[in-house]
Every structure is written in structure tokens, then in C-alpha cells.
Image 1 (cartoon, rainbow, N blue to C red):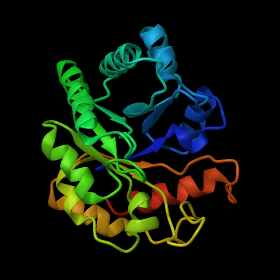
Image 2: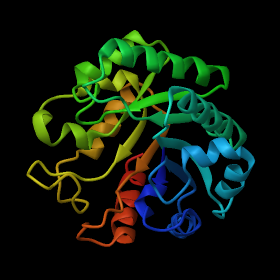
Image 3: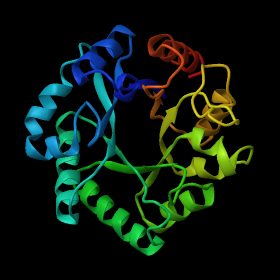
Length: 254
């Protein structure tokens, strides 16, 4: 296992500033957030010019992209597929082997979600890329059983485990050990169980990093652990010290 930093830890800055800061924090791997409504790379920009997007990712000195985490807002299914294919081709150009996408909300019928994910897996496998879906509240992965159903029914699909979404809300205090067999990627921050505690200072929450790492080791997980503390406007702490603390904590355990 190795530790990476999400560009979304510095999402209020430009991509170039975020990469520079991540490099200064002595990370060697970066998990690139490609969000249509973010300030960094957007899926529509990648689709418009893949080589230009690749050039921007080479800005951070000593940094290698390890994964892409993507949020789309395409106006049509055709445009969605175009953007996803472009992101897979960008991943191949910069030697990224994994693209993480968001699962659909629960309002979307399960049958439709399975067909969507199967199409993405077919496209990604043709490009040599692993696709995962995040564990995310309010979606088809909001419970471990829902997440497992997607992976069992869509061959080749993996999970990006974000334990924060199983720490607060309806899943608080419940076991999610059965998802580890499907985990191909991990996003980490610290999270409490109370209201407005989705993201707290490192060491003040309930996330058991050592237990998570031990569970991953049982399945011979050898991929990235991403520091994914979100740079949100109402955060009551400075980002760099918290990112640094979680980096050191994870590195001490892998």
C-alpha cells in the first residue's frame, strides 16, 4: 500500500497550486479529482483536449497521478460516454490504472444502474483501466449490501471505500467488513458520529485506520490509500496541517 493525496484537499485553489502544495507536503502520488463543478480539471475539458489535460497533470514536481476520482454533469448519455472514454484515455496516457465514479442516487432503478456500470466497465476494460464506485450515502452503495450487489452483478467493477459514509447516519456503528473483498481504492479522512461531524480534525473522530488497513491486508490489497480531507468553505481547521497529520499516520501503519 502507498499513500496519496487528493487534489480535492486543496479544491479552492487552482490545479497547479494544489499540485504544488501536495508536492511540498512530500507526497509522491496524487489522486486527481476531475469534477465538472470543481476548480481543477473538468470531464468536459478532458473530452475537449486529452493531451492538454495530460500536460496539466505533469505540473506537480515529483508527483505521479495514481487514480482519478470523477464527477460528471453531462447533458446527454452520448456526451457522458464521450467524457468517460476521454478520461480513460487520459488515464492510460499518464499511467493511471483506476478511475472512480459516483454511484447513482437511490431514485434510479437498480436495473438502470447495473446497465450503466456495465457499459462503463466495458469501455474501461478496453482501455486497460479499473473502474470503481464510491461508497456514498443516498446512493446504491449507501449500505454494504447495496455496494456488494453492484460488484457481484457487474463483473469487473470494484469499490472505492470511503468509510466516512458508513460512520455517520443510518450506518453509524454497523459493521461493513463484508465489502473489503471488493475494495480497489480507499478515500480517508476522520469522521465523528454526531451531527455535523462528517469531517473532523484527525484523531477526534471514529475512523479506525489500523483496523481498515488490517482488513485490506487480509485481501492482499496493494493499492493506494488516499488522504481525502475536503477543502470546504466551512471547515474549522487549516488544511495543510490536517493533511500532513493523516499522511504521517497512514505511512506509519503501511
